[in-house]
Image (cartoon, rainbow, N blue to C red):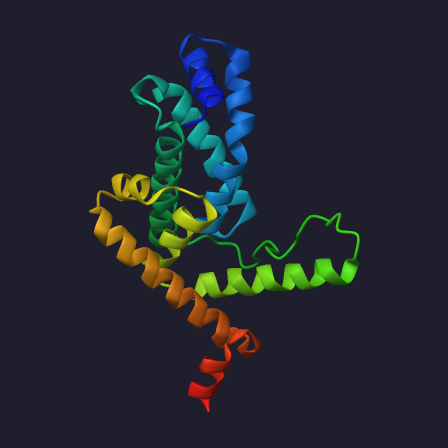
Length: 195
């Protein structure tokens, strides 16, 4: 954890409301993004993010050392898993999903380049949705959230070697899904194997 984040957490523990506001602003994007990737709905992700920060505020003293970000993301992950379990136990009555393909306007100078980049992102996220839960979680935690392998191992309660192998397996599976959705991403070797 960076020194300034460590200082913010310590100021929050001392009751500094402005430090808490800064901490939330600094971390809310990562919490929301992780929740969205697990839940797939903007509203659910926003609700979970709010609940996570309430829990973090109540339990801030239980976070020891400089592992605040891993601790925060573990709380977010656990909250999302609880939400998914509740959703399965009691399916929602709504028939229409919120359009989760809506994106913010891109400030890229060339609209064609922005369209290509967005298409690639959608392709990767579509491929990510095709992965099983274990592989998707590895990609989310390591590649999207940027957690270190040791932090993931601690979060999931797994040996480091298991996390490394799952991470590699998840990347290979994601690559296969991307190629399955859009064969133009296949390497020449992949194309030769397909024929």
